[in-house]
Image (tube, rainbow over all chains, first blue to last red; front, side, top):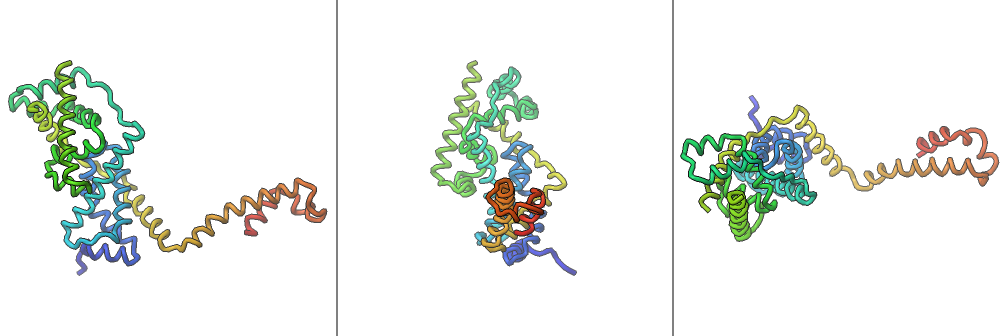
Length: 195
Length: 98
């Protein structure tokens, strides 16, 4: 009775000249990589960047020195995050981030959330479609670096050190970016409140 | 900043509820096709790759030279006759000659 090969065994086989065995890693980690990218990218771009991520994983395999499954997952998630960051950098470079002004409904949503809505009302507001629209709009107002840092620290709840490790940046850089991004968001929201 | 924290809290709920879509049916096959191509390129010596990239370029140059030669009276009389007067045949001979 044959058991499933471990990740380390499959990686070894791929490195020894059997690229077709990469299919096992692809099937095993496709949902994991898709779930990471779904948080950071528009739905229509997830497949394309996931494709790039797996190609990058294959090309970087000789550099992987970890042993445990946790180390492997951490390593591939870093590659996925960096691919997402590159995507946003490219979008900003080509100026393809579309930022229409907020609609009246979206402005009302911001005002109500920032005000003193009761807990039940707050829960209801987070379920409204304006929530996702304003989130996209607000993230689009930030630079790609600020966007990634804010998503990882303020929205996903990673520590500054964890986010720095994932993005391959210094802790000081992530800390400064995180504060700057929050201040910028605060400024944008104030403008909406005062309008 | 309190209002911003509330907005971030609302954003967090939306953000964490984002679901990954199912990949299209050919997504995995496309990734594996590229992986196999990369693996093939890694195994093939550079001079082999270069040779096969040069073949169509050389063939095209030969076709143009042959056609140009036929159209000019510079070739000896015996070459400007028969098979070599038909551009299609010249292309055929050039490509398969290479």
